[in-house]
Amino acid sequence: MAGQYGAELPFIRPTTLAQNDSPTLDVVLHALDWLEANEYYKPDAVLLLQPTSPFRLAADIERAIDLLITCKCPAVVSITPSHPHPFLAFRLTRSGSLKKVWRHDIGHVRRQDLPETYHLNGAIYLIRTPILRMHRTFLPKGTKALVMPRERSLDIDEPCDLLIARAIVEGELWQNMCGSQAA
Figure 1 (cartoon, helix red, strand yellow):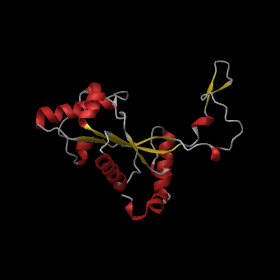
Figure 2 (tube, helix red, strand yellow; figure 1 turned 180 degrees about the vertical axis):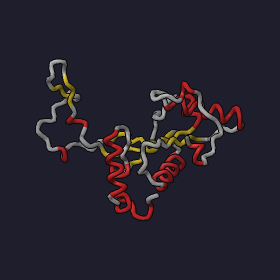
Figure 3 (cartoon, one colour; figure 1 turned 90 degrees about the horizontal axis):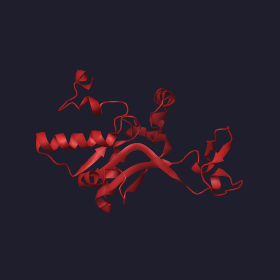
Figure 4 (tube, one colour; figure 1 turned 90 degrees about the vertical axis):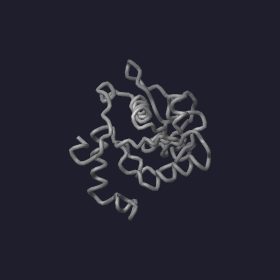
């Protein structure tokens, strides 16, 4: 489909790697293998920008690259403050009762008083190629975090997320949040 709109398509991945459940790692490793075999090119690092994270800025990507270089770390991933807080998470038992995910007792602490936690936002995965090949993960030991604000961390995984993204764009919230940096 991208080719219909003028995108350059150096290769097409095999059908087995173009399914809804195709592991991203396998897709990236296939692309690296193709580059090496067909273009004789071995990139120093891989930058994975998932299309489901449309609100990241070029400045976020530049910060990730700077962090990888200056820290000499194996990888950088983008994260955002967790909301809701994971300490307030429950599972449902077979009988429909609540069971805490975390075993420690936090009592009746206000959410604002809980320790800060973060989760992957899916916007940026930057890793040195040899590390990716060796460890087969985008989160090897020593990975550094690039903290992004929640307003740029929407990960579109469900139809509701798409509605939120449309509301942000159509309501001009995106331009207000990011000013002239918005693309």
